[in-house]
Image 1 (cartoon, rainbow, N blue to C red):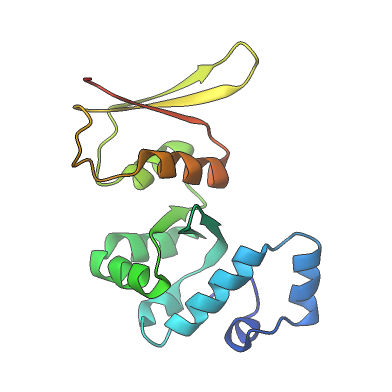
Image 2 (image 1 turned 60 degrees about the horizontal axis):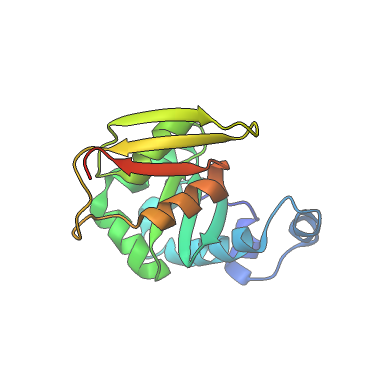
Length: 169
């Protein structure tokens, strides 16, 4: 398993001088360190984690966001039982994002299992950009995703402002 900090540091919970310097220089965040420690303890329970690479970890609104390399993303995201086990062990909702894909693919991954009907970029008069996502159908009480949390996660990870609309009201 590759982590933002040394594997030895993650297992012992004490940072070496090199990782401590990265943390002080803002190359690492406290969330990177905390999530690396949690994942290193889970390798024995979930052996598939040993073949993954965590690029960045963060906490967004109580949820855990793992920014992973391409192969790692696929291993964890495609296996639903593994994903649920990881979510249960971390004791929070889990979002896994691939660092190497386009913004469009990241949005598709975040909205999974809900399909995206259309994705548009809207330029505002002040020069800022807004990404508009249109979901087919209409919003019901049984809609499986928390749209506000999706907006927060995408803003934190990719810096994208989202506007989410449904095809029918």
